[in-house]
Image (cartoon, rainbow, N blue to C red; front, side, top):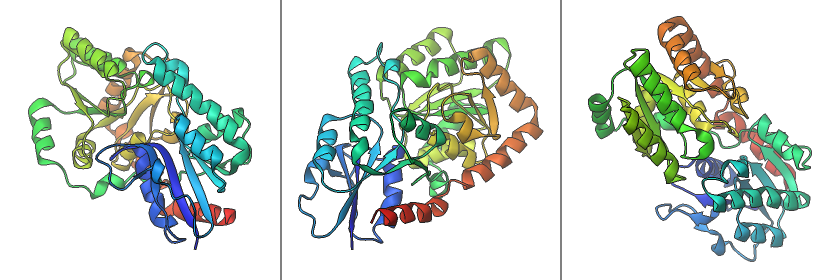
Amino acid sequence: MTEVHQVLVGAGQTDAITNMARSLQSSLRSLGPSEIFAQHPAPEVTDVQHLSSFPKNPSRGRIVIFHASGGDPEVFKFLQNSSDPLVLIFHNIAPPELFENFAPDRAALLRQGWEELSFLREKIVLSIADSKYNAQCLEKIGYQNIVVLQAGVQPNRLHKYESDIEMTRLLERETVDPLLLYVGQAAPHKRPEVLVQMQYLLTHHIGRTTSLALVGPPTLPQINAAALEQARRLRVPGCLFLGQLTENQLATLYRKASIFITASTHEGLCLPVLEAMSFGIPVIARNAAALPDTIGNTGILLPEKAGPELFAEAVCELLDNPRLHQRFAKQGLRTSAEYSIEKTAASFMNLIKGVL
């Protein structure tokens, strides 16, 4: 038996990377003991141990799987000093320059993350990227023989959750159909203010009765605060800032939404897009980073620098063209099914056994 442990920088109850690690853990435990460690586990997370408790002396062979998504000096020190074979799963690190004007400290950590990846390159025995775009990013810093595999991605994971009664009542009270949905963290490159401006155009100038729900953790609270203040000053109706939700609440929103929409300019994969597609929701996004590969022909891809006008036009096109809406919905169901954990688990385990 072999120990195969996973290491993360941070771990949350509902964040995508932690959920991917949880999905992989059940398969890895067929080989032997397998735990998840993080330098910054959230207080409510009980299934992830602090990195300081990583076992010092294994009783048998051991492999460490590192989920790279940002920089951290303690995690880097741990990985540098480890004598265990190191497997990399790369989820992308946002470009530091996007954060310079909002959070210089975070920009420094992102820059450090890229530097740490370069320094660790010679220690990595297997490199996995969860999208072609992420593989290209690794190649730019000297990585070779990268395997593209959506390890641990479960687009349909929310289907098992029942709808939340309180969220259902909130939506009945505060929104009108059709509901436009965005799910993602509050970060500069997510551009939530573009969606607020789009909703303003739809309701004030085009005469549509749409609602917009923005969901996600307040990674940088000032980003959501600025978008919310914009919505207040413009008096945008039907604009809900819901913050981070439970799985039941999020599943309720996916079941209610007519269109999933994101103005993000940078994504390594974008799991919320896949989750939306698994619920048969067409997607509108920018033709940027990994989004074209993730979405394919399941939605409308706008130019990378598209403004709120083009987003509003795309919404109208989908709402006025039921056949197009239905075609994207059906294709999204097929595309998201290709990312199922059942289809990737066997390939992932074969790669790990190859390392053994």
